[in-house]
Image (cartoon, rainbow, N blue to C red; front, side):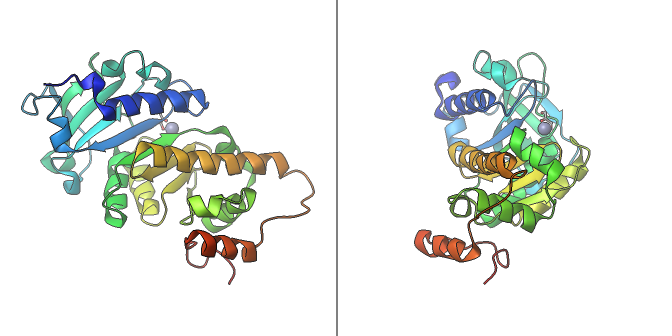
Length: 271
Ligand code: 2HA
Ligand code: ZN
C-alpha cells in the first residue's frame, strides 16, 4: 500500500487549502472543500474494506452512492491542514443512498466533515448532471465579493454583468456567470438545496453576506474561478464610489465571446 500523504490528490488538497488561507479567504475555520476521488486511485493508498467509523449525513444523495470524497473537517482551520492533514481532512465513502458516510482515513481526533456537507454533496450532484467531469466543490469567504453583497443589487444577472465589466477576462473565465443567493442560514439542508439549484446554471454561487461556492473539474480550475471573480469584485470595490468614465461595453463582450470561443449566459448580454 502506498503512503497516502504522498498521494497527488492529498498533496494538491494541502497546497490548495494553504494557498486559500494565504489569500485571506479562510479566516479561522472559514471555508470547506470536497474533492471527488477515483475509486481505483483511493485503493492504491488504503484498504477500502476497513471502515474506521460511519457518520450520518442527514440528507439523501443516491447519485453519489459508493463515491469517495476527500473533505475538510468541521471546525478545522485551513491554515493548519498542511501541518496535520490526517486531523483536518477526512476521506469518506458515501453509502446508504447518501444518508451515511464511511470514514476510511482522517478526522483523526474524532472529528467529522464540514458543516456544509449537504451543500457540497447536493452541489456535486447538480454539477455532475451538467458536466460529468466535475470533481470539486469549494467554499470560502473572499472579502471583496462579500463586501459587494452589501452595496450591489443582488439580482444574479446584474451582479454578473458588473463582475464581467470589471476585468476583460471575466466573461472568458466564467461565461456562465455568478448566481446570487440572498442571506440564508448556513450549515442547513435548505441552503444546500438552494445552492445546488443555482449550481444547475452556474459554477459560481454567491452566498450574500457570507461567501462564495465554486465548482469545477479540478482544484486549480475551481480556485481560479473564485480568484477571478474575487479580483473583479476588488476592482468594483475600488471604483464603485468614484464617477464612472468608461466600462467594457456589451459590444466588446461580444468580441471577447467570438475571439475566445465562449458563449455568455443566454440573455445576460444585450444583443
Ligand atoms: O466551515 O465556512 O459556512 C465554516 C464555514 C461555514
Ligand atoms: Zn462559510
